[in-house]
Length: 494
Image (cartoon, rainbow, N blue to C red; front, top):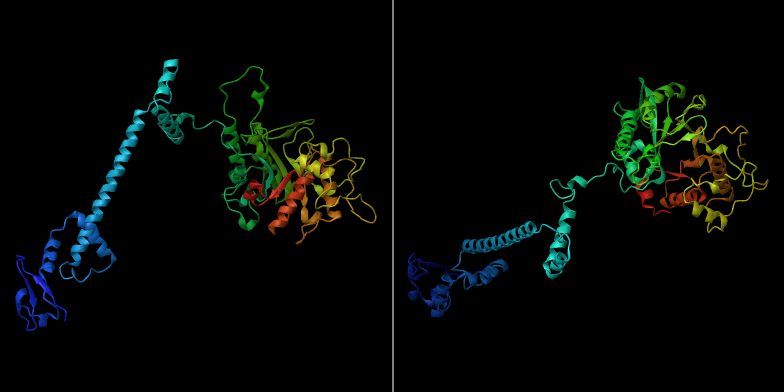
């Protein structure tokens, strides 16, 4: 039978509940009513000791409380609230100790930083010897160096006024020969492409209400997405920062007249802005000429002066409905160039037009070393292209005798890969006829001094896309038409 134990206010005696409900001193409680033997003196003394426990006994006492209910010896003498209260006091004490240790460490670190004012003594043998004699000076030097590096760009610290260079807009960005297809679809148009190193971007323009809007189709056009807002004005701002007023000049230095481009790592690399005319070409043409005028006046556009190409940091190329007749109407000046049809430039390997300025000797082709090695040696997976014969017909478009498309009026030579070369479907292999077309088109374009670009490339499966990219780069294509900027920047596909 369970028994309940109580203790009077003075703590002098213990009382038990008898079966009759009366309270009697513990010495008078019968063994039958308790259902067990009378408490011994040792048991009573143990409870007396329980009340006098010190802080050294808290930890095992708390462990008993955490593990579960205590054993029956102490169940009647310790209330649950007492256990919880002592447990809280213990953890509160530990928390205060930890906070105190952390505060002491923080104060000590700040004191050491304030005491260190120099890395190494300025000069002299005695200063050097004093540095060598003091072993703690080296530790202070390391601490100073890490502190300088961590606070370099922060205000009111050493080097805060040296944190930026005047022309570091594109610092550490290496330009790569890729074209950002439908660039206006990027999360940040223009800037995403520049941050990935792309040297060419594309914008589709539509003429409505005397304004040029940018978008893929009319349903995607909005009033705040204009050619000025997304491309022309940002390009002007970037070039203004890349070409600040020069405080330091060298007399008779030709470099003072050079205009820096977008990329700080290669200021001579131009950015190509491919403008796709979606609305009527002759009607859209004068509006584009007007909006390009500020860049032209600042000398930022590549131009043709009637005899030579004057390089600039920006090259404007027109495609789509661009009116070729208006573009070539003025033979004395030109700052918009044409995107010529690549499928009309096929040339045989031993063509009479294939002079000393062939594509293999043109420095503009990317990876020219890999390209020449591939053509001189046997291929691992591609057959060498045979010459056009009746058994292997490859009907190219005849080359115009008047050389309609030249480097004086055109910059790109582009065509749809699917339209001009054909589909690959699932096979990672190009036929002899397809390789003959690719090499002949590249050969004809490079002889004219034009840059080769294939669009409408297979984008899936990924392995097929990477295979086509690798073939085009090795064959001498100048720019890859890409949608996934991160992949082409990483270079793991090649």
